[in-house]
Image 1 (cartoon, one colour):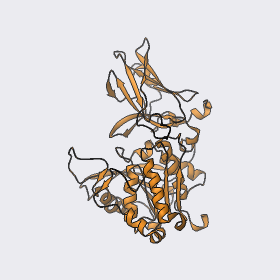
Image 2: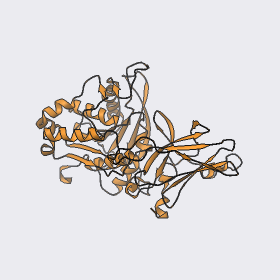
Image 3: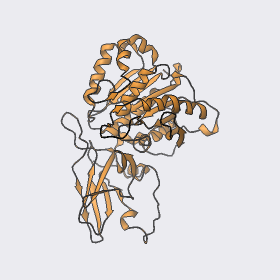
Image 4: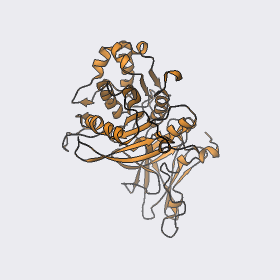
Length: 402
């Protein structure tokens, strides 16, 4: 594989938050800090890690090599750095068509897991972690371009459910601060062990929206991403990421939505309100979307949503009632979008979702029902980006646009 150098100059490969110091002092930083990351013409990513006293640097990237059936294990084979005379280890993450997009990194120096401060960082796996963007022309729609940009806001709000100050991440489209328009809102729920920032740092929804709006491919709308791992339970060994007790639902319904409608210019009716999620967030979005048809008129699920071996919601799973009455369900929602890739560990569940919805007749009853399977080569983050883009293009369209 060979990429055009202009393509590789996109800022997406430098740092998703665009925060690096372009003129670091050589007197205060190791040489590796000046260019710790370099994307080669063949798509491989070269990492430089300065550790003069270390004997070994090991890098493990997420995700691994897919099986013939498509499933992708969580971790790839380790890559070991080569040390030069200045004590700088060079490690190369090779390019592969099944290993593109956003890839988390575990960096070990002499066996100790570290964060290398001169590489991009984001929250994931319940911690801050390094990550890289591996080039992929099919992901160009999520890169950074000279278009009008919306704002990404870190917004605190008080939660009656948790009794604490919480945070939501909000995207407002270009022009929001210059007009008096009211906008539709999409509420997003992240995956297990991630948080609300992941939608922006890893899934790049703000860049996808900026680009879609610039091309006239979607209606401008606001995005509100909340943390979806709230719980009323106490810390204990029995706590699990996939057992939820209703706390996130209460934060969303009783705190986040009212806060948005009191403090931002939003269209406060179900047809201009959507909910979506990926992985664990998709399961919860399914529960809240089907459980509150009076609030949400549009649903987007990036991964499986119905039957699951370990996921439990103490308040029940309302999808069963929804599919038992498909004619009424079809009237309650304008868009019902589902997508996945075989690389996901939930893909068998996704195929089962398709079977259940087909048996219920939603395909025939809902004009806005849409399912898609992304190519087997695409990682989960790539698939989630594609799914979000297509969901965004379908949302909040007026009848004259259909």
